[in-house]
Length: 387
View 1 (cartoon, rainbow, N blue to C red):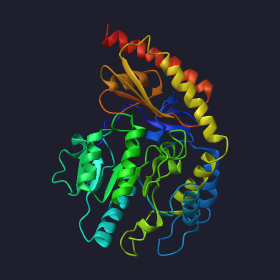
View 2: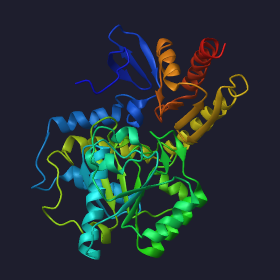
View 3: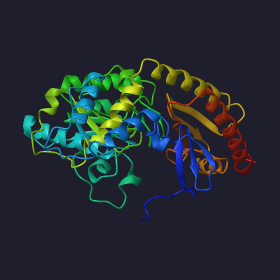
View 4: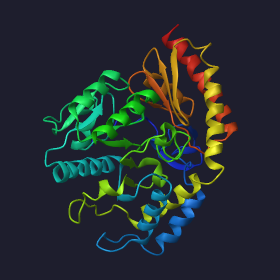
């Protein structure tokens, strides 16, 4: 169906930071499947574990215990501030589960319909509930009427905090770094005050880490950098190294609102998906892995900063870790298309932000190669667009 504006490239193979086309041309991939292949393409440890699991069991329903699912849940709980996990197949499904859990709590504990505050320019998914939660009108267009129960406030705005105090919603749901909304980090003081308001008023704090989780921003989960303890967190993308998996984690007193039959998934927590998740999480949690991510991301950021003097159309470089946005004067997709011609894969994040999402395993040599190619792209863009 005509649902994607596909670029003229057919990818046949991937390894590490590179993919190869059907013409056997190599491309340096700074998209990572939109923050999904965090360990690069086809990481050997994950591949080996999946091959072993393929010979044992592909699928069983959630009517029975699934050992791999329980193992992954235990690991996620051990490495986070949460107590229980629900598995699904995508970020949108994880956010759907979070929304349903919030509604269940509102009905069970407060005996009223739930209201959830989200923020303008947020992105939470493509299902009807997550579209309603999303703070972008272009995502909603054509799918009205919207599901009720969502209130959209200004992001990083202190007046919004006053509004939350007055509204006393059931939950506040946000990304600590808006990805699709332009790679915009949350202000630390603002979110600290937001968290305090939630605690004072018994409002649940739901953090969407679908794009920021699994080491993408330099820590296993971004909420750790903000010194928060959310009540609910959602994950997907990088959790399975490209294998479809999502997860919704919650504190025990919150997750108790779900009882058997209230929510479920045929494929959620599939043995293959959980095997990929276990290996991915174990690798990212290794002592030196995130240290190396911090070092390489610092090097990448420093190299990008050197471009500011030469290319005045770059207004700002922002982001955390290996989730970086370059706001430009102009159309970001022009740069994405020019990069493709130079065998470099990039993304946009809105009309005027170029988004960089290299694999977390990127080497310094690959960063240098990227900067060299990207500089050529920027020179071409300057000549064609800015004279």
